Amino acid sequence: MKKKIFKRKRNGFKICRKFFKDDYRSAFTDGNVVNYFLGEWIEKPKKCGPLAVFDTIEHVNQFLWYGGGYNNQKIFKCKYIKSKETYLYTMRPFISSRFILPKGTCLADKVKLIEQVNWLGMTYD
Image (cartoon, rainbow, N blue to C red; front, side, top):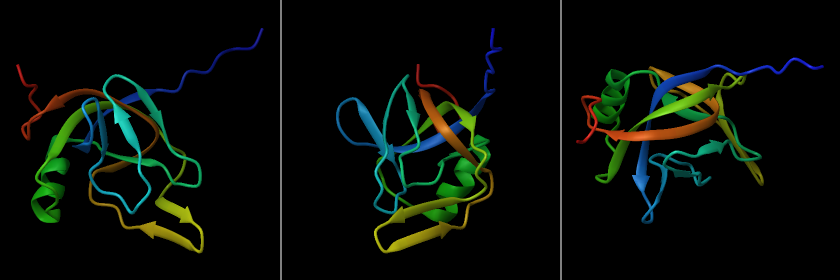
């Protein structure tokens, strides 16, 4: 009998934008769109690098403070499965890009949004 290997799920934070009623998209994108649904595992797309999450709420805040961004950003606690890949990239026709990562970025093969939190990391009750 084969022994099943379980990948360790880690805790992190994901910045998203509300898109439709029940789905969210990565708040920062280069044109490759990833849709997230609360409570569902989302895998990295084909022809694309890993998904990006932050390790702490402090790193989320540093990124938002210095990076600016959209008004409708939402911060979520998430679970993720760490990627073996070491950089963020995309491969579109005629373009291959690598990205510089902000401090506290973790790379993931799968991400699951757990619950929305405020900038202090506290849930909305």
